[in-house]
Amino acid sequence: MIDKVPLDTQLAAESRPRCPVGESHCVVIDQVTALHSEIAHLAEQVRTDTLTGLYNFRHFRFTLEQEMERTRRTQQTTALIMVDLDYFKKVNDNWGHEGGNQALIATADVLRSCTRRLDIACRYGGEEFSIILPATDLITAMQVAERIREQVAATPVLIDGKTLQLTASLGVDIYTFMHDEAPEQFVDRADSCLYQAKQQGRNRVCHGGLDMGSAESAVSREERELLSGFFGDQVDD
Image 1: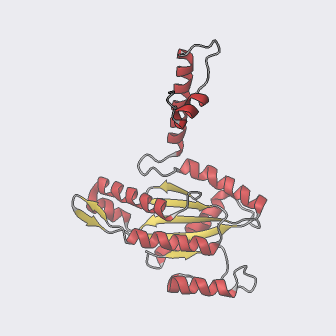
Image 2 (image 1 turned 180 degrees about the vertical axis):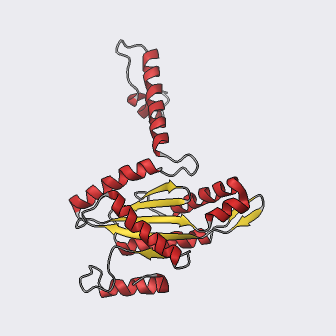
Image 3 (image 1 turned 90 degrees about the vertical axis):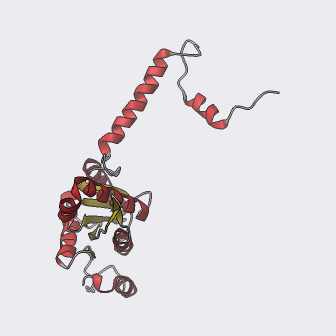
């Protein structure tokens, strides 16, 4: 009786390059395969933040430009959430550099758990993070941001047996096909909302994108009531 070869082994064998002279073992092919693997690993390192495992600023800029171009072609809005940990300097002062690192890692875990696989969560720099949400409207982005805010506040960080409680401020804005701006301008708009959240007391979500009281707003009365009911006083008019 002939033993069956596992399917994954078959696929691996089929995908492996074959020696042009029919040898069962080819040193050149081994070297090429190893080189391809190393290149893929280096490419991942180039776009990944080593501490948190999230995408880095370089990848953020590249992807944001792509998604803005997609919006101009498809007319589907792109949402952007900027996240900043509150009082992070005090975290470093009181808990040390390693404590700060653990806070950043914990926040990255929250971002991964609160976003979809198609969303792009990045470490923007320092204690600031960004999430690009493709084909996402303002209300959905606000819901995601509020979920992140709640989860950060509900996730204590254990450092040397002691508990560090974090909070975060978030700014949300959207890019539509009617906008005529560079990626930097889009980021500035979302950052302005983040700054507003800081100014209003931190640990909150502020948004831009649409004038919620305008008669020309694309948001219906029902949607405005949903926002007000969902976020209460945290939604800005």
